[in-house]
Length: 182
Image 1 (cartoon, rainbow, N blue to C red):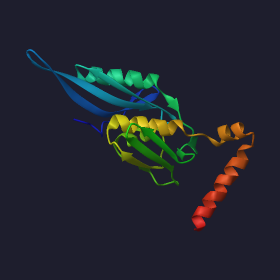
Image 2: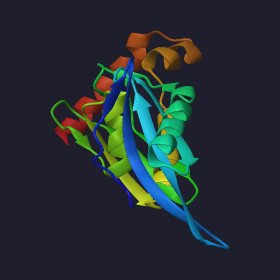
Image 3: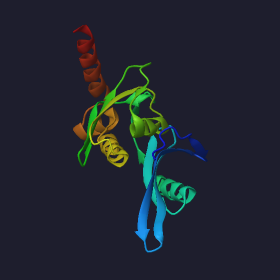
Image 4: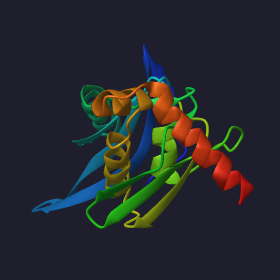
């Protein structure tokens, strides 16, 4: 019972999206007791995003718990021109693997299900993704966060290498031109 197209809500500075709801049953002496597990992604659409999972006997309570956990687990992701990723990245979690690729302007978000929710709340407008292996929403989200955690901005790369930012960016532009000509 997964809801992928849940509307985004704006709670102050964060926008939250419900990725999935799962009904689980516990068999007891008198019958079945039902509970609900929710998976939520929150972001400020300016480069910060987080996810959380919550379980409760009622749907609204599980969503609230998941949202609170997501707000505690927010990470900052460096974005290029505020619309795409700086470079390609691969993330893994369990048997799930995701590939994230930077895209030219006008491409849009080419991603499925849980990954789309992450990029919409993150504020990315152009990205191409591919999910390989597990299609479980929990695994896909954790693999995507692994890939986002591996991203580095040219500024951080330059400081680590002891170079200037324009040296790093000029190399990227040279490789982009070479790829376009072939």
